Length: 308
Image 1: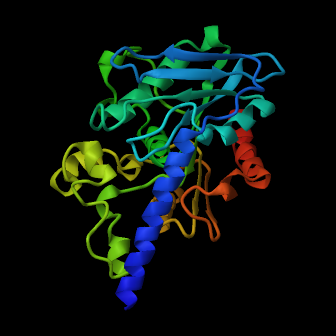
Image 2: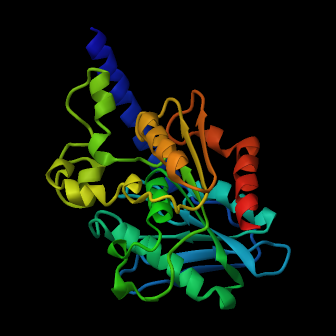
C-alpha cells in the first residue's frame, strides 16, 4: 500500500509539472510596458530557432549590463516570449538590458545543439555590444528548468570549445559570462533516478527511452553516458567559474534538490567567486515563491554586486 501511495504521488508530480510547463509556454510575458525593444533578431543562421529579443530600460542611458534569459520547457517546449520571462524583466527597472533567447529544441536538433546556440547568442551579444549599448564584460545568464541547466553549463564551461559550433559565427569572441542565476536546473541526468530508488519507486522516469533527457540526446541516456556527461555542469568546474546564485524548492520532484545541492556544494568548494545556494521551503518545481518581490530583490542584489 505504501508503494502504491508513492507511485500516485509521483504520477501527480509529473502531471503538475506538465501543467506548469504548458501554462508557462501558452502565456506570453507582459512586455507592453517596455518602451524600447527589438524583437526577433537573428544571432546565427543554422535554424529559425536562433533568434533573440532585446528589452531596454525605460530610463537611463547605456551601455547597460545584460541579463541573458534562457527559457525552460524540458528542452522540448518553450519560447523566448513565455511568461517565464516576467521576473527577469524586472531587471529593466534596475538598469539592466534583458535579452531573451530561443534555441533549438530537442524535436529539431539533438544535444549539444542547445548549448551551442546559447554560447552563440552570448558571443553575438558580446560582438555587437557597442552597437547595442551593452557592456560586453557585464553579461549574466539566468535560466529556469531546462534553461537553468543551460545557464549553469554556460557558466561552468566558459570558453570550452567542445561546446561551441564554429558554424554559428563570431569565432574568437568569448562565450564567458560574469554571473549566473540558476533556477532549479536539473543536474547530472544519469543519476537523477537514484532519488526515485530511495523512495522505492521503479519504472525510472529519466532513464526511460521516452524521457525528455533521452529525447534530448536521441537515445536512452544510459546508452550514451559520455554524451550525457557533456550536459552536466559539474563536469566543467575548475575553480574559475563566475559568481553563481542557485535556488530550488525543497519539494521539487523534477530537478531533484539533492542533485542541485550537490552541484552547489562542489562549486562552493572549488570556485574562488561567490556561490549562493538557497532552498525555498515547501516549494516545488518553479512555483510562484520564486517570483516574489523579496526573492527577486535578493537576486538583483546578487547581480548588482557582480555587474555594477
